[in-house]
Image 1: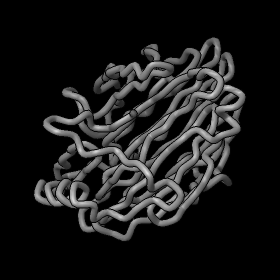
Image 2: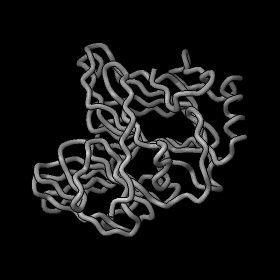
Image 3: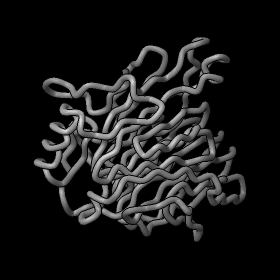
Image 4: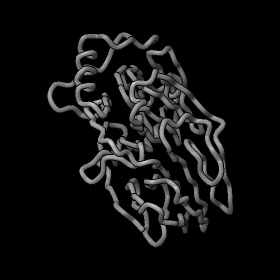
Length: 294
């Protein structure tokens, strides 16, 4: 019933930790998800905040989902949005986009909280070079049943579909379980995984380890349940037949496309971010950290 359990690699960023489950040696993707990062919970010092300077992406979509706190998003399309719990931010890089993510000033003044998920989804064959786009969606379907509460972030689950754009068949949901609650997990997606991000829960007869990515066998009908209450992320979707390459912030099915993106960023050919163009993350020399958190 359980295909694989992936223990994330933790990165200590001083006042908070980022835990990266995929890509890893054990697993590179779950459905279209090619990056799964969980960060926090953390209480930052007064005046401090998260500052991810402008940096580029290609051939992927980023999804930001918060449990606590707020993040200001700006991108080279001129988009500006403050991400808060209950709202999903989807940024489609396509042929190329630049963005920054920073703690809002009001959060810094009271002591910023950070707790949430940052995931990347590879774009499917034939759609990797689509136009870049950004959307913030807050009117998401909520399903409640006997102590279980699920927010459908992307795709369709339990007969409810989110309005969030999905470039490939995708499922993504936050599930809250009260003590004693149970919830069956749809078996329709080709690939599925769950991550316990708070409290306690089990899938079938397997207890979930905190922040571990538990990958479910395809087609297996399973029940998620909790004795004392828990928060769980469910993610997955269609399996990709074509390999994806990852270097720094670039994802593509074509290595040469990544090489071109490297040259374009070095040469300043990516567009600037309005309102946040005074600094940027330089391209790394040698082997990079795949995501840069300055």
